[in-house]
Image 1 (tube, rainbow, N blue to C red):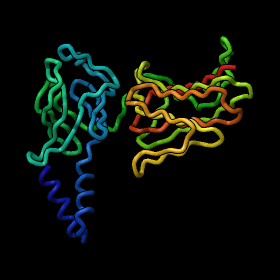
Image 2 (cartoon, rainbow, N blue to C red):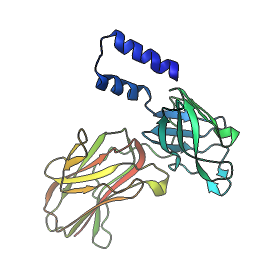
Image 3 (cartoon, one colour):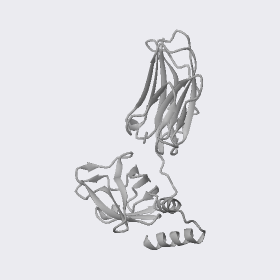
Image 4 (cartoon, one colour):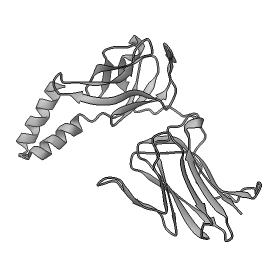
Length: 262
């Protein structure tokens, strides 16, 4: 790791980048902790920001009293330790206890110093495991079948998207509607629903994350990770409504449903 960073700094100086800010930005980029990694026992994790989430469970399904499930975090609070030039995170021990341990990371592989041998070595892979779900729907609104006064206008399953991506769906709310309820879920079906929901009448919501996190929408549901996102409108105006799923992190297996009550 030290040699890679030294080489990077020499290259920056050679190209005439004398700004500390530019060098710091490049330094952080070189240490960016992200990607998909697989262990010898077949478990697959995805590293994003300061966490690593389980994409696929391998042969090691239990560690002590801890059961490993798809979508759950495996490494939490990842940080670079300049003093020792390695990394640390909250990881699981062989007894299933969550403790802070060190690991090395060179951009292509992860080696965790402690824990089960089968889960110490992780190699970068370009293959994302199948979630086992169906092909994502195109999102074409469905008139549905009225049930107790409820009509499903949209029911899209297994949506996936990258960090900061947007997927927008349009529905038409008829006049005389008493209630519009939009729900974005996915955890109960094995997905990783790290996305937010925005709803706006007349035009698509606008989301800006370049400086903080702001939006223009009639409803913004930005609950903590893995919680369902819900927008409810009583006596909504008739016309076209736009539902946007925004990738606060990379996500998959999300389900979007819009139901009205007449």
